[in-house]
Image 1: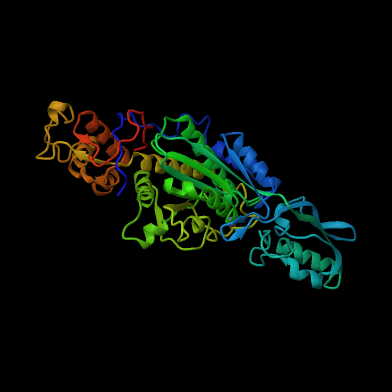
Image 2: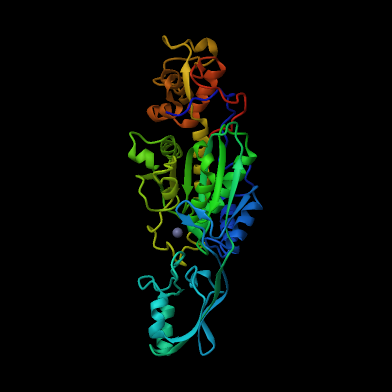
Length: 474
Ligand code: ZN
């Protein structure tokens, strides 16, 4: 059951979509941001990650944290930083694969290597996609000593045709691990209470647009919209961290604050043209009922007319694995469009600017914002006149002309909110059972609060009241 909250001032007219606070066309802006984010040579540590965080910090107030290499974090240790100055394969002095052209060409955390070897021996260190011969795969070797190059299968065939299996290939990887630090960034948008909504996007993949420059752009835009909008009841924390180790380092350092997290969403792959997929929270999967964030995502997609593929929690995927580890078991679900591994360009050079689409990015931002607004607007109330229906007409809450089968949506929402507000059902319950948009339900509740017909249940501890809430997207 969601925590009861204080009464709120009535909502204004619902906001038109797209949000007027976003200059220009939202989708084009987001696509432009993905294009700006794409070239940074991100990794789980290093300057490409810092440049990414600086870019985000240029748009929203980002709090940067550096965790020194060697620092124990939960069951892990922060790895050394990895710096590359040059990496290539060359034949007769001519570069045939060059890291300078794409960071995907080098297996992350490779090296150092400087030797010449026959192609036959080099093959063990070459990664291609025979089924997608034009694409370069993305590979990492973070936690085991290894080195390798990634190239298109066509390029490998061309190399073999040129030099043969015994042909000598020069291998240069000028890269070194060194004692540095791991970086992550957070934007905290203070709300009326310390209760938090966590939004997280992994920030470690280089040169891949959908996974996950798309979500870095969407999460940055979300933070800016929330900052520019009226204060929410919840504090919203947007986390940009390298996958796995970044989330683990953040969790390790955040322990005392984790109890404040009421709801959360991991964002990934939000720019492709596929429909939305939602992975439920661990507790919402294993427990008796889905959690509020699980329900809010479903209601938002229903209200906005988007299809939604809902899946149970499983311990694979992105950082929901860490947030949903049994010791933490945080109420964090995951929203994607097409999930990882389910689109052919996943973790290849085909995950480029053409794969992500302005309309999909704008739709994703709108949906994520609506989920936050829904979670923030959900509450449990008590009908102050529960014996019979209160007379709505004299309070200006009933349409002058009776007789219509169900009456307009606003009218229905008033009746539903009154009937289910028994101190134990929330507005999400009302939206689910009535089939009415959550925004209409929230507006009805605000009108009823103003009329004195809904109140906070007696057991509830009122929080900051009288603050204007941001209009919801109905
Ligand atoms: Zn990935």
